Length: 393
Image (cartoon, rainbow, N blue to C red; front, side, top):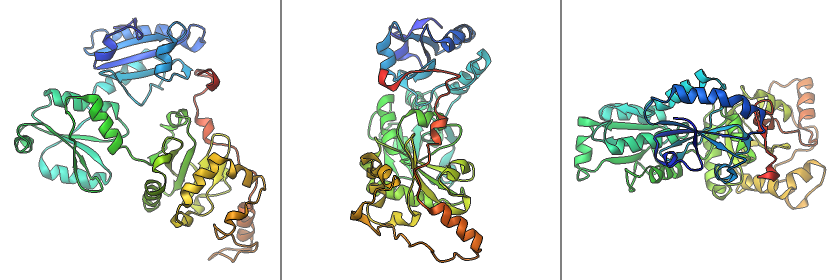
C-alpha cells in the first residue's frame, strides 16, 4: 500500500517490511521521485507484508529528525518497526525499487543440516556468526530471527538448523528454541534473551557479532561516510589478514571507548590505491595506517609501531586534540621526540633499492601539510540529493 504518512501510520510499527521515502516538496529530486515511487507502491500493493510509506519532512520534521535524515530524498527500511542500517541508494526507477524489495523479501538466513555442515560453516567463516535452532521455518521464533537477520544484513551472518536436525538441541533446552553466537573468543555463547523479541535479539547481535573493524568497499563507502565519523583506516594487501587481525587486536585493547568518535575500517590497498597515493605511498608500502578526518588525511608513522603501548590510542587522541594538524604545520612537540624512531636524513638503503628509488622514497617520506581528504568524495552526491547543512540538523 502507498500513501501512508509515516508520521501517523500504526502499520509502520508492525508491518514486516516498510520502505519510507523521506522527502521535501521544494526538493527537485523528491519531486522527480514521487510519481516513480507511487507506481512502485501500486505494483507492490498485493505483495503481503510490504508497505511503501512517505514522510513529508517539511510538514512533519519530527519524524525526519527521529530517523536522522540529512538529505532528500532518503529511502529507509523498517523490519517490524526496527530500522535497517542500509538505505536504498540504487537507481530511482520502478523496476529497481521493486527488485530491491524482492531481494529484501528473500530469506537472509542460511540453512544448515546437522553438525557436519555447522563445522564447515565454522571453518569457512573464521569470524563470529549467529546460529539458531528452530522447530521449523514457520515457527514464530524463526520469523523473528529472520527479521533480525534482515536488519543486521551485511553486518553479521545468520544461520539456522531446523526440524529434525534441531530437535535434540531444543529437547535439551526444555523445548525452547535456541540462539548462539558461534566462533566467539571464549567459545560459543548462548543468547539468554527472548527469541521472540526482535529488538532485543538485534541489540544482542549488534553488541556481540558486528566487527569492530569493518571493511570499506566502493559499495558501502557512501553509507560509511554518511555516518560522519573520521576514518581510522588500514590499507592492506587482501592476502594479508595478519595485519587486519593485529589492527583489530590493538583497537580492542586500546580504543574500546573511541568507537563512538571514529570508524575503524580496513580496505583493500590495491583497490584503494588512489588514497594511498595522496599519502605519498604505493602498494609496495602496505600495510599503511591512516586517519581521514574528511578534511585531511594523516599517516600513522610506521605500522610496526602499533606494538608500542597505547600508540594507536594516542594517534586518535592527537586527531581530536588538533595535535596531528599542528604537527603537520611544522609545530614540534618535545614530549614525544623519538617515539616513532625517527631516522635522521640519509636513511640506509633498503634491500634491492637503487639510489633513484631511495631518493624517491625519501622525497615521499618528507612530512608536508596533510593531504586533503579523499573519502569525503564518497559522500552523497549533490546531483542526486538535496543535502542539508549539518548546522540545520
